[in-house]
Length: 176
View 1 (cartoon, helix red, strand yellow):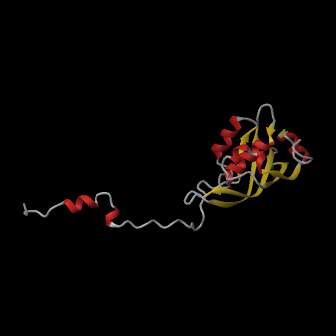
View 2 (tube, helix red, strand yellow; view 1 turned 45 degrees about the vertical axis):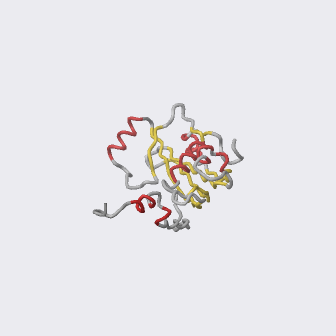
View 3 (cartoon, helix red, strand yellow; view 1 turned 30 degrees about the horizontal axis):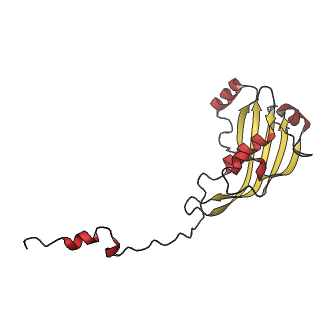
């Protein structure tokens, strides 16, 4: 167990049948792939897991994430605060064939916060890996400040130019 409320791994069928719910603060340092994308490993992620059965009697797991993280601004390279407030629901399907059928029927494609995934064999999902995947997917592709304080570029004077000396050696045409 990661804590009294969050299992290390789970069977989606069992937790859905039991109506499992947990809300736990997990240190950012517990997510090594996420830490590689951040400027530091300080802080916590509030993780909420809720499991239930869908209307079609398939197990679902809803993952809620709340965190304030820091990444490097890609414009000025200074830390930028990224606020994560993300909810995503996974509906576990029996196998790849059912997944393909659902994808072909285009059910729920208008909801980006809902996805179908095939049930792992054996039916065991590693909790922190699933949460870390969702955290990484919720980060901005290119983190930027709204306004960056970039340093002013120095203006070059003509004599600072490397070819300025050659210009002085040049003689006007026809004066030979």
